[in-house]
Length: 276
Length: 314
Image (cartoon, rainbow over the protein chains, first blue to last red):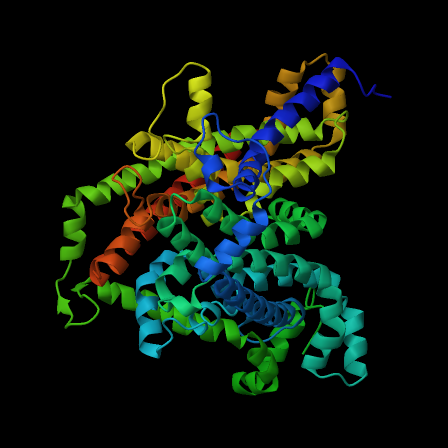
């Protein structure tokens, strides 16, 4: 047995805790500023303790900006986009994993190839497409172009190929299931772990997307949280308490979702790397 | 329709020959319907825009008036555009300053967590990964406060240890360092998780054999761990190259829409040209240059990866 308090053990844990300090300091700093009055920021030495102004700061953020509205917008866009991405990715991933049909290999190769294209290539023309369709400043511009994710289809195909047994599929066919019922009753329940992982990745990605919403969300009423936050920063750049409270509120949902499912999430990230 | 297509290749070929293609497609129409959302959205919002952007890059257009055909003028202008070259330089400097520390710190933390005597492994994994899930806009806001010249914590610490204040956010090199630090901060945890997965796949017997031969920790690390980790390290290099060349949010939020020369990156310049100055043609040309830069760097990465694999024993 290894002794818990060997010198090596102490040094090792000390190093890990020191790194952790650096890793968590920005969070600590965000909370310090969000819980203090702005005047506490402009002191030398800086304030390093939590204050009791959080509630005041929050109500000021809500009162002086459109924060609450953009929070609602982001929740709406994120939930709708995640739902549709999960549905279309699982449907297509299932078909690619479990069926043979004409052109399948070509279609799948094509799908993989599209993943190599950097999204900036279509940034300018897609803005014009959105303008032409009249979608500028509309949630459609955030949801529809990326409705079916090649990455998601790929992930779910990889998972389903082995996880969904052919016997089960054959039994379903014998029971008279059509393709959609096979997907709905047999495949979906089995895919659940991968759907959970892809759902989390999608949720986090859509929630904090910045460049595309910045370009197409021309209507301030439809601003997402990240745009509102960047606006907050440039409009109230000296009112740090306000800006930090906004940052805290905008990040909290991401942190909560991650902490709730951290085990599955980290396992999913590690899995993806080892396989690729 | 057939499940378990592995090992039934002959059957499939015969099956296809006996019926016509159209009949097959009609028979499997629901399958095509199920996969169609991706292809339809890609056609409209992927393929068409890409072709359209070739057309755009050969024109001068402000988005409202007439498009004028200018041939390769946009690309020719790129070569004389000093801001563009500055943006390329900035992007690569930020990338180099961030990629190496991210890998080194990721390897160190992964090895520390992987040690058999380490306690609270799951806690460390979660805590180190946390920065990776934090919204980049918020991160940029936090860092702009930490590195502000007069009241930032960074300068407070520098003064405490007797050094001078650094005007981080207004200095050309300083702002690149801050952007690189943000990237490092967010990616160390990600790399750590990937490296841990790699470390756990190295057979224990190898370490035992090395211990029998009297190898010290440093030798074990350089002779066993590093060579076996090479594929996964290269994977992280490729991923961070692709994301590094597209850095946008950090410099954009830091500069509040008024990018200073020292922090303008390729994508930020593209954004400015297309959406602040409405030079859609020039913006499209810039996006093609970015595409070819990413392609070239990816090919170089891939070449190095292959060469090393041929030369290596494992």
